[in-house]
Image 1: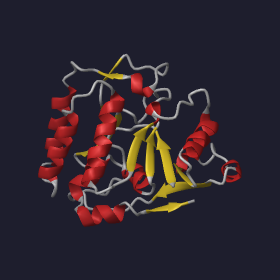
Image 2: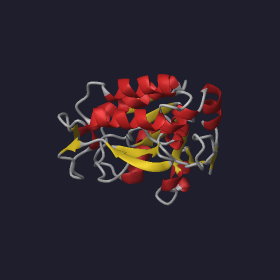
Image 3: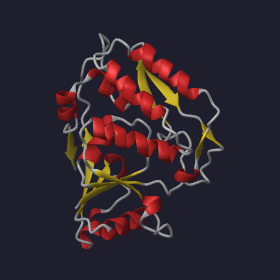
Length: 232
């Protein structure tokens, strides 16, 4: 079995979905500390040809809380504002009609925490992109919070009887291949390729939210983009 483990990100970039698509089981790492100004509750879309950062507001978010404990700011009018921004920015995109309905359903999904919203978003987008990987939450299964960093990742791999673990390229200095090899687990790092696609008549802006990918690419192109990476 091949697995990957990642913190939950909202509407993440294509590399996140490449990772999900490359494994048999994807573990949402939601029982680790929340990271302020990270990608858990924010990302970038294209507005007037430039990257625009959007943020989903949270209630009393703190790095002293675990991700699955962080609540959404329920009374904040962010949903209407966010959908309006999507509408104004992408209404002339080729896949606007069906992708907007997908985003609207996700945004209006009844959830109390950012982890719940993110899980629902990932499941719905994966279904749209025809990704069939099983997605599970670390907070519900492994009961190993006393372990830290690489040791905890290794323990999850062993509990899943995984033979192959794939991590984003950003962790290349955090994980040691020889430690995984001692447990008979292959360790690879996924490196995404910034493959250009038309974004209206603008110069291409890479690494935006998956929303941008979906707005401008049909099913065939999405299937190709999901394979635009290398394992290191």
